[in-house]
Length: 337
Image 1: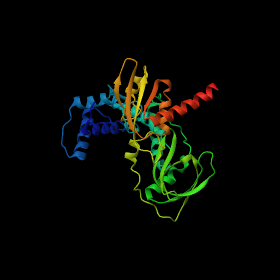
Image 2 (image 1 turned 180 degrees about the vertical axis):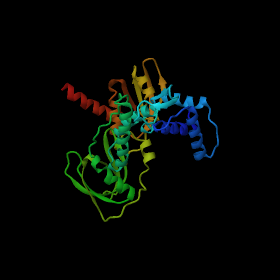
Image 3 (image 1 turned 90 degrees about the vertical axis):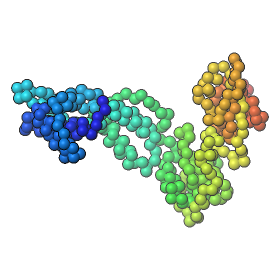
Image 4 (image 1 turned 90 degrees about the horizontal axis):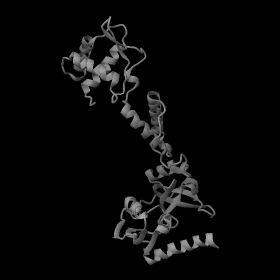
């Protein structure tokens, strides 16, 4: 039921009146107080009918969209309305049932994306919303689950790096790639990116004079530096990620057209969930289809294609096909020899 400002004012006024147990309230007295409130708030002089007030009471009792479910009773002897629960008030339930249902699901989604401590204010709001939903609905079922862990490795650096990016300050990090000794390097940080439950930092390396990607879980320390921040003139995130799957890249590698053959039922899967937004189906037969896509070949793309197993065959470029072939041969060696 759509509600207008007048109706909302009337609901609040009726609620306030029925909480005043020292007075008796029939439809006429409720109509008079409601009309006076509308005149006071909106500067509109109106006369409210018996049908309007009784309709409001019915809505407050039973309307599912409003979600008040107010315990309004009628005393036939006194010819007046009253709350059977004297502690009740619609102000204790400021959102309707439909809103609460959606809010409850939204909370479940948002809570899986906590990580930045600078969002503590939102976290506090979420906790308040959770309490409100819990008190007004009780514990509800979960209908959506995201594959997002509560703690992502390296997320303790998120706030420090976010502040450095926002304030455009160069920093010194102590970094250790997997299987290598830690080293210190000075960087100008540009962008934080989350991919497959890990955080990555895109930054300009002052030492290597070029763009580099750093996994936050491999950062050991972060310290300030006196070196000046180098403004970002090397990296356009939108254009860059349009041509890339994942996070790793070789600055010497350019966009390639990848052509691949897909067999069997896997064709339907890739039609409905493309690997990349540039993916196109260029040939269709009863047993296979051929697709193309334009992007930068990298480790994540290799792994994505290999995840489809024997249902995908790379056709070209030959260099990329050979890269996949070598990985397949290495995999075969692990299992056969």
